[in-house]
Image (cartoon, rainbow, N blue to C red; front, side):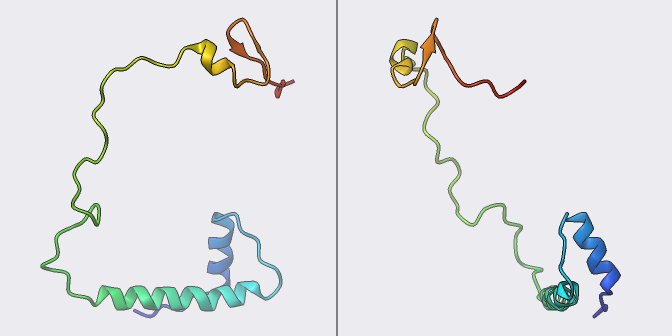
Length: 97
C-alpha cells in the first residue's frame, strides 16, 4: 500500500487530536506517521491464522477477592481524619459560585 501522507492530512489529524504544531513540526510528524504506517504494513504481512484472539495475556480468570458483606467503618471514625466536619459530614471549601 505505502500511501504517502500529506501535510494537510497531518494537520487534520492534529486538529482531531487537539494538537498544535509549531513551524516545521508538521513535516517532522509526517515522517513519524509514515514510519508508523509502514510498521503496520509489516504487521499486516504476519500470518496469524492459527492464533486465537486474546483479551488478556495472562490465563487468570478471576483474581478478585470474594465479595462478602462486612461491617463498614463508622462515620465517626472516618470523620476523625477530616480537617473540618459538622453534623456527620466533611466541611470542604466552596468550589462553585
